[in-house]
Image 1 (cartoon, rainbow, N blue to C red):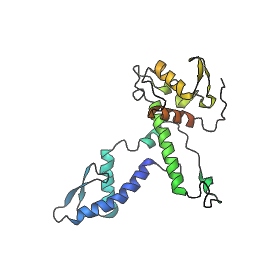
Image 2: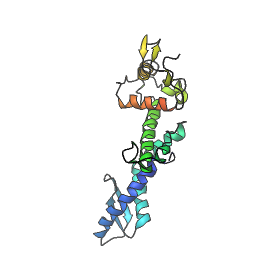
Image 3: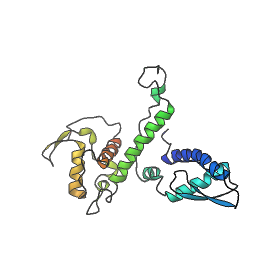
Image 4: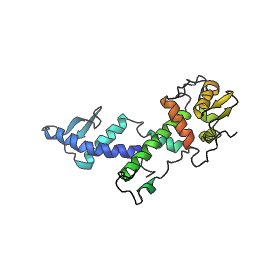
Length: 217
């Protein structure tokens, strides 16, 4: 489950859509060795052989889609660059006793794959921001990982706690903003900003398995 990538999911969806879309287009084609058709997401064009069918046709459309979207596998690339921990394996939820009315009684393996993929994508987005001074809008070219490689020494498990830099009890997001405002000199984030939520998710994910111990210094 943990090796299922966003790119693999996109490939599956596009392969299915390709068969339907191009079959319709080819049905009206009578002349020429090649034809230009719309790619499966409806935003691009692809030139394919008039005689192409099945896998050959789907691969041609996928190849064009990937050329048009070179950053589509950003999740896999980010995971390769940094030491990201995988989400928890929830397969135990499907081990017997899931009768009607049970919280997880109506879910299956596909649900677990979806949960894991979306959670991991959320965390990976946080990693992308954490490691980029540009995304943090730093005016001095500083990113979070320069002081905290792989989110080390962030201790999200110790919040809430009294933070001496701020002179009050704070949450993790307050300390993230302190770092953005000071060493990073970037854009101050609202508590519900998508970037703030992603940063929190990444930092907490990197401490997976650590016992909560709020107030600890």
